[in-house]
Length: 150
Image (tube, rainbow, N blue to C red; front, side, top):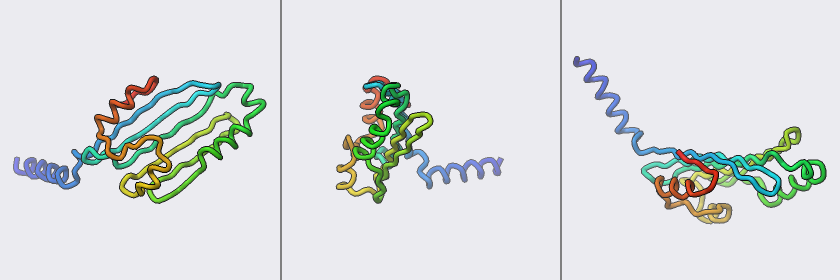
């Protein structure tokens, strides 16, 4: 009995010290269609003590209209490279991947809110989520048609 109590106490202390109860992860997925292409969205938001700590948003553009693939695939790739150039700054990264065989383009944006400067964040972010809580972000993203969060 003493051993069970001791082991339980050790686990409880580890839980308190590491703050496991203070971390939440919001994961959202969805699909958006438009202009001859489908966008598959996967996002993950990590909160520590109800403050946004990290976010990763990945959008895979796929199922392009056959006309686009046959006549303008290279132009589409160049436009995306110009509009969304890759970057890697302290706490902020954006990467692009092109799959010419499947005709898919993957855009990934990662933000570490503990490292990124306010200036860099505001230059590249489409929404200002620096002070949003878990529940507020979940409610806001759940309003988007085609997006589900859990």
